[in-house]
Length: 137
Image (cartoon, rainbow, N blue to C red; front, side, top):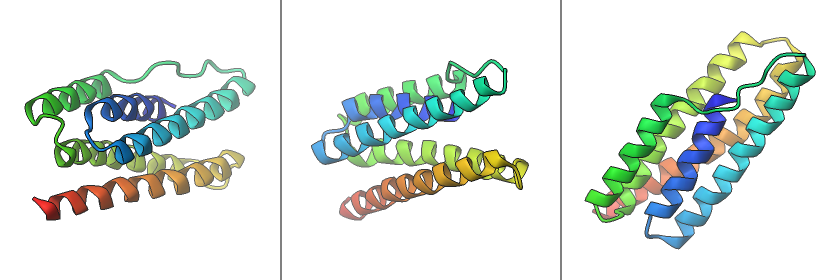
């Protein structure tokens, strides 16, 4: 839940920093998707009579601040922002991979597998865009 909240907020902030309107739209779409994933997971946690995570992490808040600073220093440079977004995507992908190992064989694993497929696709899109902008430099 927490990494999805962090990811959603990170994409929203990155969408405001990046100059390319197409990438900004992609970031907003991925942010909305991650927010929906967090809400879906919160529902499952609450269904099991537990208190779902409602906030992101302090580390992610620092990462978003770094994106803001890097965006200001670089003048909203697409490559710099994509590089930071891809770094955040590595973190959410790793969190899902860990959760999938921990929930193997459970009903929750099916949901996590579905979400992970979309997280991986988003990660790959951001990585490919970052690499394309790097090649232009």
